[in-house]
Image (cartoon, rainbow, N blue to C red; front, side):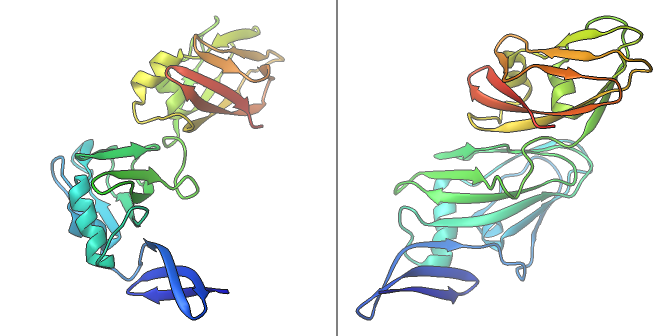
Amino acid sequence: MGEKVEKVSGSFLSGFVVTGTSVLPRINRRIDSLNTPATVSGANAVYTAAQIARGIILRDTSAGNRTDTLPDASDIKIGIANVYTLPAEGDSIQFEVRNDGNNVLTLAPGSATSLQGDFVIPSGGIRILTAYMVGSSAIVVSVNPYAAPGSVPVQTSNITAASNQTYSAAQLLGGYITRDPAGAPRTDVTATGAQIDTARTSLVVGSYFDVTLKNTAGAANAVTLNGGVGVTLISAIVVAQNETAVLRFIKTGTATYDVVKLG
């Protein structure tokens, strides 16, 4: 018995050869850079199976923030069938959505389609998505965690108040906070888990986003960070003068997050 790999129409088929018979349990279409991308502009849009089958969707958000809807499960199944002829549970199609405008793009599920991962795409951002058949009429679309960032793009918040502060969900999700403690050590607090959930409804259990916290103090005054309600710090977080900490917020449940200091 040996492994058999074939390439058919921009797809890779893999299985095992048993006494001369090829067993192909699953077919996964890959993104094909030779395909002509589908382009979408204007108001909120509903993507088609044909656009997904192109492999790349270029979305122009220059005119404002957009919320686009992925095809219904039945249409995604048609897109898979166009490539594989006989789609079955476990088959998938992979495609890429690029935000080519200056505003935020949010992707919403179509009928009988569920989403797993972060579907808020910042200006210039990319999400590589895989749509899986999980039954005869249901589709799950997941974000490739290794191909897309876990957080929104960097948007700096400069905090210089001469008192302890509570960081808002928007400041945390912006990704970069500079903190001048203004002459004394400070003990700041994160937004609550519920506030983060409200600000970023696309996060699911296991999703994460990173926040960089930089202490810009002019003297030896540290910034200590505590967690708001529902936010648990895995270890103490103290950022000294001129130091920077990278904090990962990991969603562990409804309105609950663990925070790990990465550096």
